[in-house]
Length: 267
Image (tube, rainbow, N blue to C red):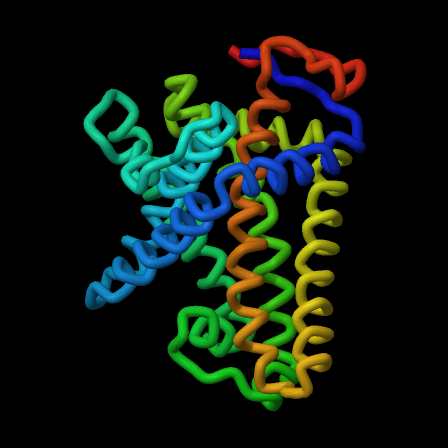
């Protein structure tokens, strides 16, 4: 397994690949993402420990979306069961559960720090335990907790970005996969910065489009009815694009259209 150092423009390429692959199997990928969200929601309903269970499932479900993307790339229809590929019997299942445990611990750690900043208001809003009001959002302590959580979550996201794929397809232990994922994201920071900016643009553009459609129809109340399905579809596209970031960063050979990449051994 080699770490690939890719040029910044590859971030745009990842996003384009995700959108194209989504439209190869739009019903399947949309349905799988809806199942993803439904699974997380059902797990979160378990009393007392539901939130932790939902967090633990996220790495495995993310891997399932990557596996579904790979199936779509091969021209096949991804079935619902593929979403739970990482949780089926196999040598990687235990490691994937360990990975989920680490994600839950680190994420809850970020939330705990936010509690120290604003007394728990941001955490309650995030987990649905409190309503979002203009007064709450505009409070200085809430803003501090919000930005602090975002900054602290960035390295957590980098650690877990590639980790599920490295565990499932490369058989790495949880700790090693987290380290290699962090290194890969850091060494390809320019490409990931472009990738994030592209997706911010896509999400913003979809919101503007929903607003324009609602305005043309003459009914502003239709905006949410249009925006929610569109947001889910765009988010499904985003998850579809994740596989290509992994393949590009950990491919044993450089791809011709990605430019002169530099490979470095990681194992």
